[in-house]
Length: 310
Length: 297
Image 1 (cartoon, each protein chain N blue to C red):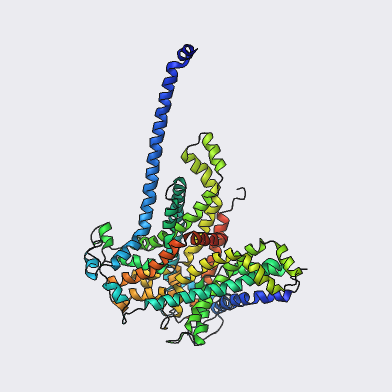
Image 2 (cartoon, each protein chain N blue to C red):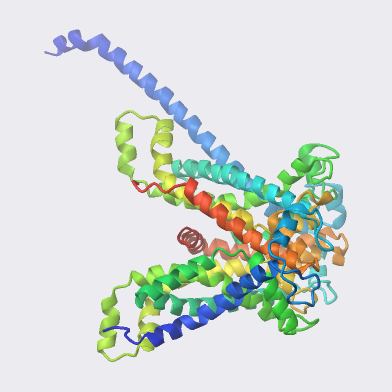
C-alpha cells in the first residue's frame, strides 16, 4: 500500500511541497518587508509629530548662545531660562496666564453645558413643529464663522465700557461670545443623546409626582453624563486654545491668558531671547501633554465623536 | 400626558436662544444692514442707504478705507483656496494612508494613535510659535535641513513661503482625520475581508476594492470638515506671518478679516463679513452636493 502511493504520487508530491514552501517563503519575506516598510513610514510621521515639541523642550534648557550657534547642539543643562521666566520682573506672568485660561475655559464649559442641556431637552421632548423649526435655527447658527459676527459684538462691548484699559470686565467680552459660538454644537450633540433615552423612566418619575424641572435635573441629566463629558472636553480645548477673541478683546487689558501670552513673547516685549521663549512655550505645552497622555482615551474619543456628529 | 405645559419648555430654551440671538443673529443682521449703508467713521452706527454700492466697490475698487486693500481680499481668497486643496489632498490623503497602515499593524497601535493625535490638543498658537522659531534665521534649523542661506518665508518665493505657512496647519490636523478614519476602518466588518482573502484577493485589491469604497462616507465627512475648517484658519498664519507677510501675499480669509477690522470704514467690514458668510454657505453646500453620501453602505 505504502509503495503504491509513493510510486503514484511520490516525486511530484515532494516537488509540489518544495514549490509550495518556496512560494510561502517568498510570500513571508515580502510580508516582512511590507511590515518593516509600514513601521518605517509610521515611525517617520511619529518622529515628525514629536520633533517640534522635543526640540522646543530641549532648547528651553540651552543658553541663548548655543541656540544661535548650532541648531541641534547640546552642552549641559541650563536652567537660566526657567529662572528668568518665573522671575518677579519677567515680562510675562505664566502662572496668571494659566489661571486666566483655566478660568475662561472653565466658565465657557459650565455655562454652555447647562444652558445647552436645557435647550436640547426642549427640542428632544417637546416635539412638534416649533421644536423642529428651532432645531433648524440652531443648525443654521453653526454656519456663522466667528469673524462674520464679531465686529458688532466688539463694538457693543467697547461702548459698554468692557474693554477699557486695565479692566477685568473684558473677561466677559471673551467668554460670552465663546459660549454663544459653542451652543449650537452642544445642543445638537445632546439632543441626539436625550432622544435615545427611554421615555418610560421620565414617565414613571412623573407618576411619582416629580415636577418637570425635577425630572430633568435629577433624572435626565445624570443619564447623559457621558455626553456631557464629550462636550466638555471639546468645548474646553476649543475655548482654551482660541486666540482670535483674546487678541481682539484683551488688548490693553490686565488679563493675559496663555494664547495671548504666547503672542507677547514673540513680539518685541522680550527682545529675541530665544531660550526664554522656548521655556515659555515648554511651560505652556508640557502640562497639556501630560494631561493628554493620561486622559488620551477619553480625549480622542470625545473630540472625534463630537466632530463627526457635529 | 408628559410635558404638557409648554411654557416650561420655552423657559428651558430661553437662555440658549437669548445667547444665539444676542451674539450671532443680531450682529449678523447689523452687518447686513450696515453693508447697504455708507458708514465711514467708527463713531457712527448708521449712514445713508447706498444699495449694492458697497458690494460693487468691494469687487472693483482696489482700496477701501484707510488700511485694507481689496486686492488683498483676492490674495486671501486664493490662498484659502490653495489651503483647501492641500487639506483635502495632503491632510486627509496622508491621514488615510496612515490609518490604513496603522490598521495593519498589531504592535504599537495605541502609541501611534496617541502620538499622531497629540498636536490637536496643543493650541495652534503654541505650535505656530514653535514653527516661527524653526523658520527663524537665528535658530538655523531651516539651514540645517535645506542648505545654507535658506529662508522659509521670503518675498522672493511667494508660493514656497505659502507652503511653509500651510505646512504646520496640515501637520497639526493629520492626526485628527487619521483617528476618524481609523475608527471608520475598524467599523468595516471582518467577514468581508476574510471572504476576499479566500477568493484570492491581494492586499492592494482589498484596500482599493473593499476598504476605500466602504470608507467613503467617513472620508466624505473628513473632507467636508477639512473644507469648512480651512475657512476658519486664523491662529497659524496670524503668528507665523504678521500682517499678511511680505507684500501682503500671505493673507488668508481669517487673517485678512482681522486686518480689515483695523480700518475705519465700517461698511467695508460689514460687507466683508456678509461676503464671508455667503462664501461659507456656498462652499459647504457645494461640498455636500459634490461629495454625496453613499446610502447603500
